Length: 390
Image (cartoon, rainbow, N blue to C red; front, side, top):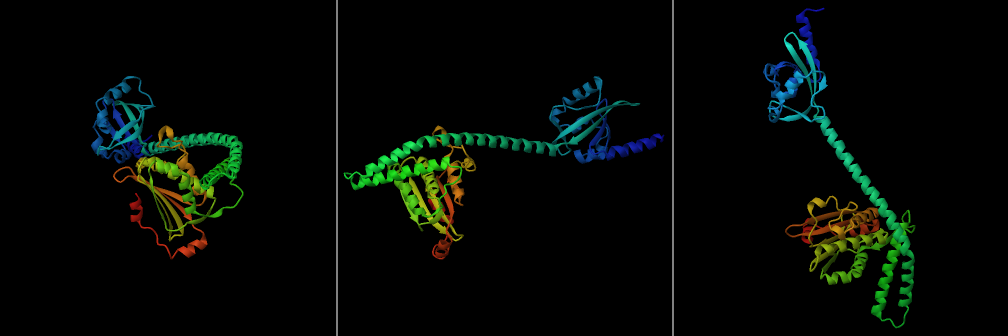
């Protein structure tokens, strides 16, 4: 057995070696001993803490009620236990900053009376990790819900596509017979031909929906300008009734090797959305350019109501819509998916204040031969040109 001085010296050495802040508090709440970790954690020196009430380490708003908890602990059979089990406890540093803590209490009987040893641990890092895990779990749940909705939607779409195949085939046959009618004038024949093309497009969409993979035929060299003009022809009545003025600025025909149906659907979705955003008596601007980085860019701009800034990061997610009950939340998701399929990318710029409007830019890879021919002929658009469209 060592002398009392030896025992006390080694006790202090052991206390200072502890990884947590350690305090010894008497039954009146005075700090009679503290280790070096307490200094590091709370910012007070040990000398400053000795003799002070332990409430100095508690946030000011809790200091009035803390003595009652401390007195109750000493009065009712004190035993080893965590303090404030199930509660979020906070410590307060000398500079007034607060931080989350865990506290364990251990009573000890000394010749000077009952005391309690408190072990205080900073759990800031753990709390941050828990919040991050909670956030990730929430994101995972949202992703699973979207996945389930997409799966259900896919089954529904496949069923609808299967059911409309036969009526589409019959409609195609009727249009063929109608087109062969010798009494049909040129205007009628043009309308029948346009209707046949749209029925064919619906048939292709139906087959693609039912097929597990992309249709077997190879992508073809397609003029983007012709696809845009075809969509405008199809939407002519809609644009006319809404009194939307269409401005075209084609610096190039924009030849790309793609599946035309997919890109046509992209343009249809974006132009239809633009007309909805404009309402009436607005302006729609379509442009095609080739950039020096060997990309063809198609811009579809409107001077409509614009998209709120807080929605710009989510508009391409499935089932997100700003149209309320009128929207399905599928259009822009399909649009982005189709652009991704052809090896392109899509960007959006929008404003809801001042000069409001939206500009969607679709970047498509140009064929190698076209890149070589056009690289010296056409300069890239300036940022001012885009601003002018907005």
